[in-house]
Image 1 (cartoon, rainbow, N blue to C red):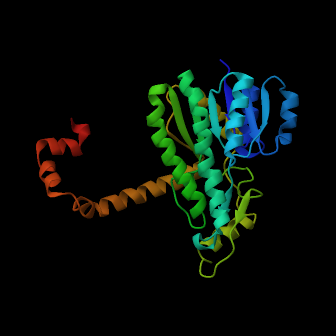
Image 2 (image 1 turned 30 degrees about the horizontal axis):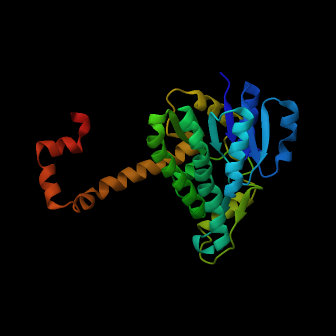
Image 3 (image 1 turned 180 degrees about the vertical axis):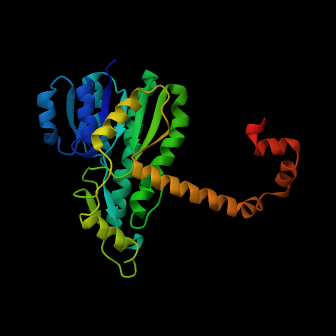
Length: 295
């Protein structure tokens, strides 16, 4: 059964690969881009399947208008993919107010608003898939990426809560968290804050690595697109899907460090309970509460 996709940021990167994969499969795609002329070749090749829409995801009126256009054209939206976004590197104190706002507006506020615009249609259908293109940087923090990762961590939290909220409606939500992929994320799409003295060994090292030409991502965007096609059709999709061996390695290291910290500081964590809670946890019911798998 063919699906109708609504994909933001369809003109390049993962969005372009996913748009092409969906069309090749026979699905229909409402492909959005700030400059829809960049999708002209796909419109010519798939005139009955693709509908190119001008959309700046930071403009609320355009968001709701583009969703209405897509529904008018195709009658429904089966899969929403919030892909539009860009990266920025710098020390937290070095970013301008405009850079901070731009990151949050594009990488966090926009996917939330696009999701909110599509949800009434999916709720009416009692079905739908929402794929939020986040990053392993939404699970692991790294020097130089504080503002970018603030947005991605926020998107992950929003998506995790939303998945529980809309499950009774037949809507499934997945946060896709790639590592480095061979798109222009670390190239033409990357922006930088001004340099600030004192951060040479942390932020400066990352800037130098990305601008040196030595960074060669391991991920293949076409393979990622195929994985997302399968994800949208899976009967039991995960809320978090990590893509790429680089992302798996980073997340595994981060999870191990978090577990070690949790264990090390557990006495302090437990010491803050109210005495009534302490008394409860010493009972049979309390021990069962702490270890539900033993019930």
